[in-house]
Length: 266
Ligand code: UDP
Image (cartoon, rainbow, N blue to C red):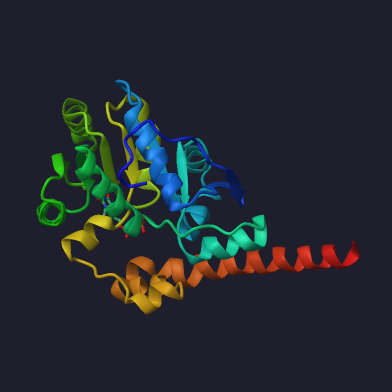
């Protein structure tokens, strides 16, 4: 599939909802096909919006209608993480792929290098985005990075960032502002952006720049990378571990028990 040219793909996307928040039932190759279609069919302003739904974004979206509507109206919403996998089985009787942004985006960047697509980096601390830019060029020497901007900005700097993106017209805009900032920013600005796709990539630049390391493979394969990330940033991630994950687990367990009782009665 990786060698295919834009425009050769069909839409095999299947959308579902987990606690009111959209997730697409799609595998990695089909998601890459959609991205090729989006970039192949871009036409002036109006970037396609691509988000990753995980336990954290569901938690936030259930409390924020604007965020929920932004996610639900995106062009592609990929399932991210082991919590979503479990939720898919229990709530939607579906087997979701784990297409987390940290593993998925590098594959997109490999395709970008191969197809000559241009990339713009927006988000993270000033030094982090600079190191990320440098490291990406080491990893993908022919990647066409046409611009980068740090993510901690004043309101007064926003127009300048939007103008710069529109001048560079990237095929891929990576937005790394964390949730919910990045989803809200993309939902608000994508219609006016001259870009192919906007991808909400969270802490990706921190990983690429080496500020944070990925969890060992065994932790990733048993679905507990979130625990490793908690130990890297206990203050920043405490709510996710002690509030969001337990609350999500309670909702899943309750729904599972109800569905079992219903099955027994039938
Ligand atoms: N960030 C930013 N501007 C802000 C707040 C955060 O650019 O105003 C960046 C931050 O430096 C980090 C990323 O957004 O690189 C958030 O990473 P995190 O792992 O917290 O993402 P999440 O898991 O929330 O998607």
